[in-house]
Image (cartoon, rainbow, N blue to C red; front, side, top):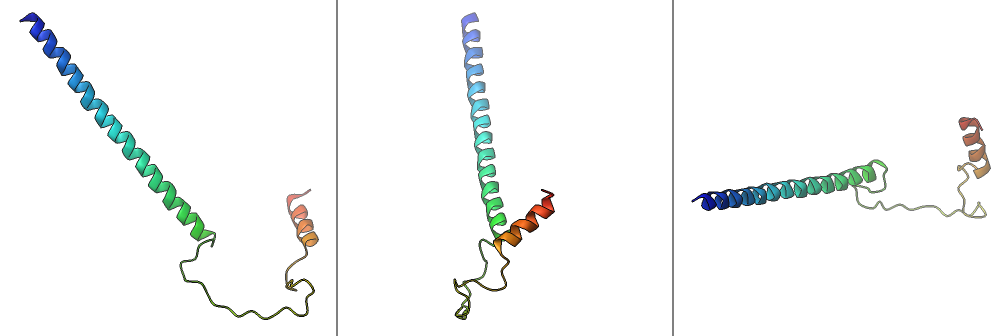
Length: 93
């Protein structure tokens, strides 16, 4: 009878271990799934906030030809050297 009690305790501990480990494993998988969904949602939010992705369909625009500018450059864009000088002034270098 004594060995029967010891065997019952051992079997009970093994069953308890299996139940606890499966619950912990399920919780870990759930946390990983939630983190993956959150990362995807954050990526979509950042893409929309940076205007990399538009919620609207592609806009149809007719652009005029740039016959007057030699390299097709628009005349209202600042020169690269001017932009570099402005950045240097702002950073104090």
